[in-house]
Amino acid sequence: MHSEDTGYRETIGDAPLVVRAGRDGDVRRPGSRAAQRVARHVRRSRVAASSSNSGGFTVIETSTNVQYSAEFIRATGIVYLKRTPFEVIVGAAEPVPDDVIVSLEAFHAAPVAVEEITREELVLHLSARTSDDIESHTAPIVWPSQQGRLEAVADDEPVVNRVNRYVIEAIRVGASDVHIEPSATDASVRFRVDGVLEPHDEIPRTFARRIVARIKVLAALDTMDRRRPQDGRVKLTLFATPYDLRVSVIPTVHGESVSIRLCDSGSVVRSISELGFPEPVCDRVRSLAQVESALVVLSGPTGAGKTTTLHAILSAIDRTRRNVVSIEDPVEYTIPGVTHVPVDASHDRGYRDVLKSVLRHDPDVIAVGELRDKDAAELAVRAAMTGHTVFTTLHTRSAPTVAVRLREIGVPQYAVTAALSSAVAQRLVRRLCHSCREPMPEPPRRVETALGGFAPSRAWGAVGCTACRNTGFTGRMPIVEYVEFVDGAPAPTAPSMLECAKAVVETGESSPEEIARCL
Image (tube, rainbow, N blue to C red; front, top):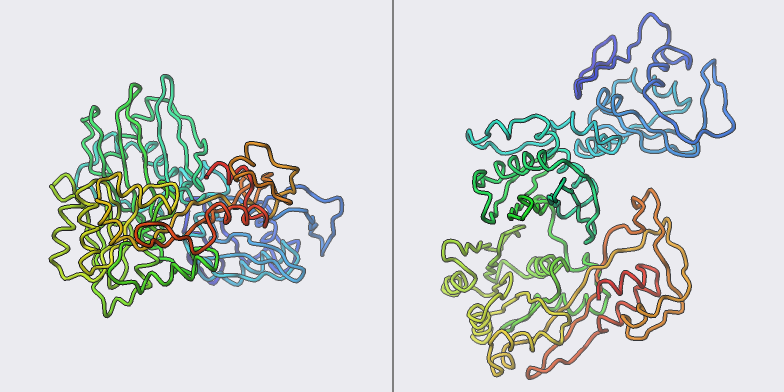
């Protein structure tokens, strides 16, 4: 931004707007040209029946928020936040000149207060106005240099803008994954939000091929090889926030399909108390940070939050007195005081090989991202039997079945009995939007069956509104169970997952249908 004695000129975007005090008179006067300039860049919706006149300038009260145009936001760096009975609150990432505030006060006919926002929040406000503006405002994304690998197809401006647009929109809505999937005639773009895929865009197949080529270049993949699956990753920065994109490309009968996992590299690891577990489970999970000579297993399907829980436990360990080593594929987040070791199966560095090396590194605590085969599982169990604390993850439907799953992998019964200490099983269910949820009648029979015949006395259903993007849900919450093992047999010490799910339904935090979908 840039200010002068005579006014204010935009420097953020490419649509200049000058709000200037000068010959048109006092900008404080509501009917001044400065106020009228502001008015041209403001939209109001659902106009109320009444209006008021203040000093020659008509102020129309509305039943919904004012929306500044994308041009105005780019020009001034100011976004509308809300109106209170006493003032209008706007947001800006940089100081706003006095004459601009005066012009806004003249337009709104009310005092204007400026609240500081980040530059990332500014671009997300801008992207919310219109998708078209995102394509012409891609400067906030900083991609890594590809050292001359950007071929002509990757430098194609419409392709660059569209890829940037998808990334910005996915981050704005909180998507975890972006899918680009070709069909016989076109290609679909879908975002996974709160664990559910949502249609986002449809594009011609020829254009999709150019987008895939751009993504492969950014991920340092072979653009000429379209017959083999390829995996890569790329780091980008959006307004000083680093993101790690994990790219998977597979060939299909209609062309290459791309899946992109979005990871916020700058996010802070949650503490155990921030996981949202019920208090009895939270206390027991917190105690896992002090266990010694034991195997602790976190179980659940893909995307259930196992890695988040594992990192929360590791961050609770006294890392000044204990040597903590984490083996991961890939390393998503780093924790101070923890040695993170990546797995690279393509170079004969799978979980088993890395674990063997780590055992010679004098560890006290070992975290193994996932037990995928018999060799790695046996080595992890043996490490727990020889005095190490081992945390790992498995794909099982419940905590009590962890022992069964270990035996299925090939771990001997005596080893499971000696090493297995406890297990935590979890799911992530979508949380009902409190702005639009409604009481619902008796749930369908299939829902009662999924809940073990439980018929809640009171339940809520999803409706959909602007606050939740008409999905009926905002964010996710865990349902969880904790089980301790005595001589290899489960001994539940906390509410089961089904009991936790019933409590979530009765309190209206989630719907019976959502619970039935996830259990």
